[in-house]
Image: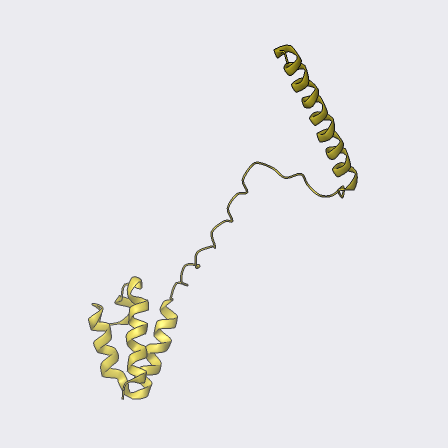
Length: 114
């Protein structure tokens, strides 16, 4: 066979392949539901990370005062004074608000100590 004959045979085979691919695409297009989206080559975006826990609620002077008053009423007056001094104050109003959470934790221990 000559090279020209081989080249013509390859061209004919490629046309036949193209016709076959066109027939398959048409058949698939007719049988596919219309609402199905075509697949994309773009990767999906990863899911957003879960939101972080909300910041803790700020503890107010009134909340601390209520707990300390309860502990004092329960007989822990001297220990409550000691806690205030631990945080550098003689009165609750002298305690820095940044220490309220720790002060409440310490006061809770007073209520559960035996």
